[in-house]
Amino acid sequence: MGRNAHRAGGASWADLRVFLEVARSGKAMAAAQALGLDHTTVGRRVRALEQALGVVLFDKSRARGYELTADGERLLGHAESMASAADALREEALAGTRGLRGQVRIGTTEGFGNFFLAPQLAGFQRRYPELRIDLLPVPRFVSLSKREADLAVTIEHPKGGPYVKAKLSDYQLRLFATREYLDAHPPIEGVEDLRRHAFVGYVDELLFSTELLYMSRIAPAERVVFRSTSIIAQFTAALQGCALAVLPCFLAAQDPRLLPVLEREVVVQKTFWIYCHEDQRRVRRVQAIWDHLRHAAAQNQAFLRGETRRMTLV
Picture 1: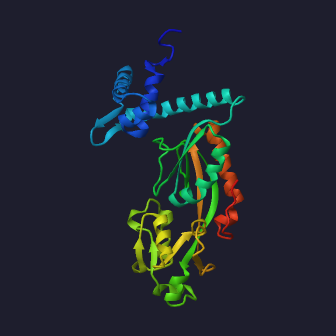
Picture 2 (picture 1 turned 45 degrees about the vertical axis):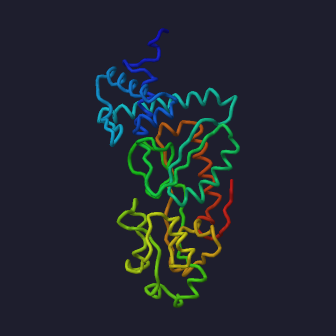
Picture 3 (picture 1 turned 180 degrees about the vertical axis):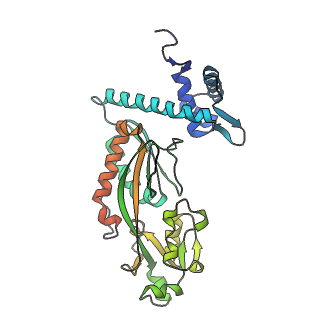
């Protein structure tokens, strides 16, 4: 076979793997740690790939790290397809002798990731001890195109792109307060009474999604006295009895001190979507987690709608 057996079009697969890791992390040092290489080796492999292809793949600077050029963006799609295909073939070959193994990284919203996906995925991982799961519950979108994650759960309906997508579940948000807050403030008998109360909410100008712009329909902006980009911070602030808060029911269910207020009048319904790159959908471990999360959501419709405070682990 010879030393060029694993080369295609002048580019070696080893160099392409380094390219993929640098493109995903944006840093030579981070890529080196992930691959178990020296960072100087990473830089040398990137230069070798650029020379083999006759293009510049990255704009490099100390401040910004490695940023993909237009040529680098084009190569990224091809390299990701090759990596996913190789992964799927490897898993298929091992399927008869082993369970799920390898790594799956999941990007999702902060509250749902911490209070629903984390417990559902922990039990799943125990059944497959060779599987490593990275859960990224952050108050922003995780980019699948940059391979920040293999799978994403989001509140925005994915539009366009080479993705496989499906509705995961509807969920509801309602108005909550502690007994201490309710006892210390004027009674709330209807929506019009809310104008006399304080609220916890988002910093609207820093929202990562327009799907979170629901407070204006419930309370005047001047009544939102505590704002945060974090839904968990809003949940924690509401527990201190400082204000009312509109929270996902699955989050408010974590603490019995939070009581529903005007639960029939103030209801916000949203949807979680699950999606991944079409190449990743063929990878057995990604498919297994996809199926597990859809099953978990289906078994917890009442919990996600706020009809029960008890979550079912599957």
